[in-house]
Image (tube, rainbow over all chains, first blue to last red; front, side, top):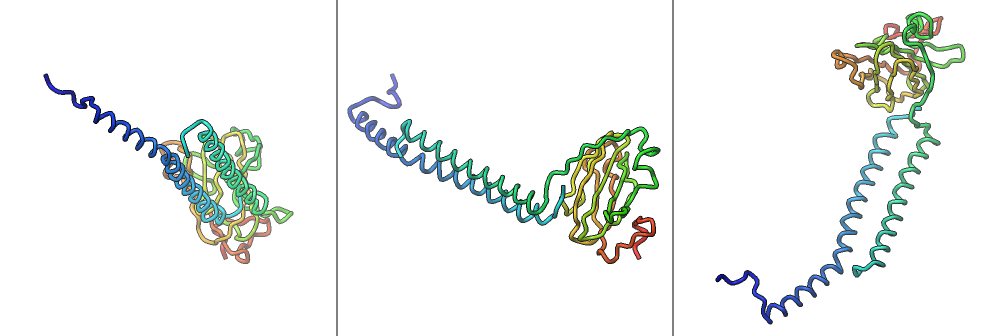
Length: 64
Length: 181
C-alpha cells in the first residue's frame, strides 16, 4: 500500500496553520496589488485615448 | 485592506468614482472640441430621389464640382457611384469654410479625406453633407471606404487644396482642378 501524497500528521497540522496565516497575510495585500495593476492599465488606456484625441484627432481640423 | 464586505464595497465605490471621473474627462474633451473647435459628427437629413439625381436635382452634371455661391460660400458637390467619384477631382481653398455635398444613385458608399476629419457615409436617397476647413494645402486622397462592389478598390478621388489667393473661380463661381492658374 502506497503512502498518501500528503500524509496527515501533527507536523502537517502545524504546517497547515502556517500556510493559512501566510494565505491570510497574502490576501490582505492582494487587493492593493490588484487595484494598482487595474489603475495602471486604466490609466494607460486613458492616456492613450487623450494622446490620440489631442495629438491626432483635434489637429485634423474642424468638421461637422 | 482586509477581505470583507465593507472593504469590497469601499473598493467598488472608489472604482465607480474613478470611472465616473474618466467618463467626465472624455465627455469634457468632446464638449470642448464641439463648442470651441466646431468638431461634431456630420449629420444631415436631406432626401433626394436616386433615380433622377442626374436630371432634376442639384446634382445634375452642370452643378457638380466646386462652386462659390452668391453669398460667397464654397460648396463642392460630388456623385459617388460604382466605381468612381464624379467629378474625380475637386479644388478647394485652404483656410476657408467649405461645404461638401455627396449623394449616390446606386449603392452605399463612404468616403474620407486623408489627414482630415472628413469622413461620411453616402447612402442612396440621402444627401451627405460635411462642413470643414482645410488647413494644409496639397493633393489629398479621397477613397471610398465602404465596400461597394468589385471595383471598390479603384474608387478614389483627389481633393486639391490650394492657398486661398490661388483659388480663382470663374465668372460663374465655378472652379475645377484644371483651372489652377
